Length: 180
Ligand SMILES: C[S@@+](CC[C@H](N)C(=O)[O-])C[C@H]1O[C@@H](n2cnc3c(N)ncnc32)[C@H](O)[C@@H]1O
Image (tube, rainbow, N blue to C red; front, side):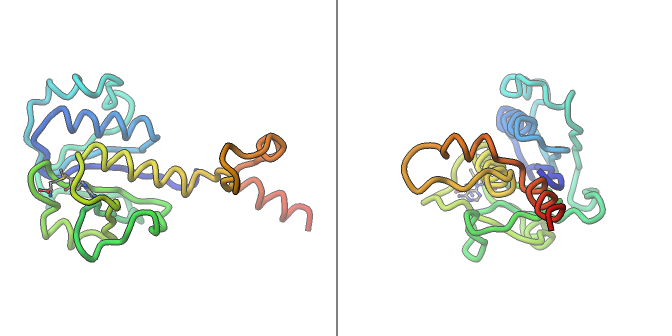
């Protein structure tokens, strides 16, 4: 997959939610994870983050938005159920970005929302758990940017020939360019 992404949370208070976000970030191949203004018992993170993600991917703990720094060229994508946010299934994910989610009680703060380049929402009737929202956002990035073959019209997987001939999107472009 081209590019990179990081994921973090603002104002999180439950260590097990942060642990679940870190584990999800690690599993989906995040380049970094972060929190802003988190308050929790750090030791409890490992109860849900059994993959000990912070030993595998950089984890930044920022005290406030003022301290928060992103790599050059990295967009900030808020994940929040607010009226004028973009529906996630219609969102084109930036190649390089960091996703930020809100606290268990409340929403992304106004200053963080203002700092975001985009805000996306998952089409649910009401708010879901923050770590589930993180997982769905990263799953959406994976299925839309992972270069998977198109889904077949009929139920089931793609036909076996298509699978054995399938190459990642970048490879297909290069192969076409080499032929012409
Ligand atoms: C449990 S929700 C916060 C509680 C919620 N604001 C409420 O009081 O109803 C925690 C975070 O998960 C994310 N989240 C949950 N459901 C979401 C959705 N459907 N779309 C986008 N983000 C969502 C947001 O980042 C949110 O701030």
